[in-house]
Image (cartoon, rainbow, N blue to C red; front, side, top):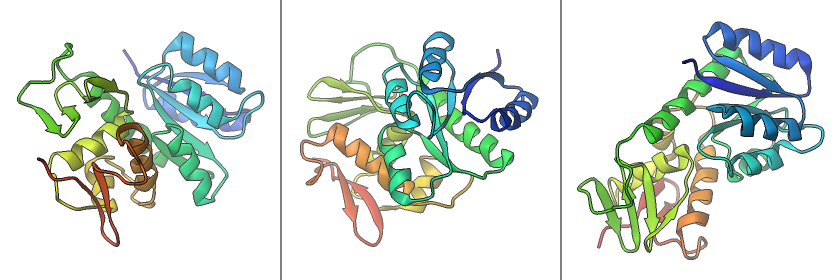
Amino acid sequence: MSVKILLVDDEPQVIEFMETFLRGEGYDIITASTGPEAVQQAKSEHPAIVVLDWMLPGMSGIDVCRELRKLGNMGVIMVTARTEEADKILGLEVGADDYLTKPFSLRELAARIRSVLRRITSQSSSPGTTDSTDSSDTINYQDLSISEAQCRVWKNGQEITLTPTEFKILLTLASRPGIVYSRLQLLQMAMEDDFLNDERTVDAHISRIRKKIEDDPAHPKYLHTVYGFGYRFGERT
């Protein structure tokens, strides 16, 4: 079965531009031109990836992304003409896995789709269906447990929902506690980014992970910033 991708844009020529190419790449394409239509299509069609324009009639791409994150483990790539770093960070902080700025090449779009699909596939295809966290693959640190095989995270026994990108960043850091990773290393190892042109995207993902796992994101005990270098995971106890 081919991978289903939902393309969301209110400009017909942009949809046609992407759809023709991605169908040629073997993807099953569905489309939407408004925010509410995008949410409805996602609910009914369950796409693996949503390529989502920021500016949409009826509901902004940011609000659509928030709704998509309630629907399950689908990848979201935001597409926009906005170039300000604050806009990009906002898109990532509401749950987007990646971000493309118009104009972009079809080759870059395809590469980013493949990258997000790898993260989703590694998360959804991992073995393990129980709530047990005592397997040998589990990383335990203070009140946090991370299961690599199950691609799941618990804090004080309560499961925390992470996007595939967030999980891979957290796992990469937690697998070697105390080791400092640069943003570039995290792009290469966790995000598998084929276009290493914006290391600051890592900052937005780190910020979102902290909001989910830290008691006080302003004073983290798990994900520490090493100024001038990158990030490290707190040393195991």
